[in-house]
Length: 238
Image (cartoon, rainbow, N blue to C red; front, side, top):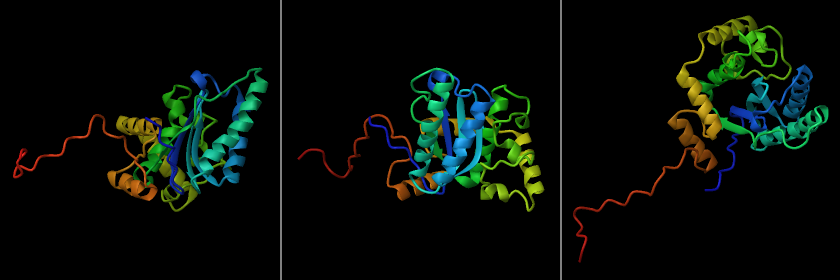
């Protein structure tokens, strides 16, 4: 069965995952992380994609973004790859692809899932055992949201602004949410939706997307379609 084109919905948040080929490292030192972030910032501006949260892990990366049109996200990721991969290959005397296939992305329903997805991304270094606290990881957007260090790459989402009337209020509220952690079902829902490419949200949200995009947004049911039920009032033979 042919794979459906990636679903991209303008002005809607998307969770993006890009992994290294065979889970190999895509960042080996601080310079690699810094170079990637610089090019990501340039590409996000060029293709009008708002970056709300990120975490660059040694062998993969997470982004939470809102593209302004249906092509900007793909163009941004392609542009960054065209710059970063040759840099990485030249620096480490290697050749060939760096990424494991195309990036994965899922559309996120904002109200119930945006803040959960942001925290999922920024807590990934903690879940992976790289640091004890999210604030200790230098290659994520948590320090920005916690008020430790402004990040010029980040465009704050309206739902983050809604956490408080002042920057201090928003930072405190966000840190409290981070300290609460995520339920295992939330982690599983976000992970599976992104890996499989299906929208993350309510049935109403998925129905709206299907009508808006004129395409299927949920997995097709397996097996043969059921036979039509015979009207008991109609004889089966003449």
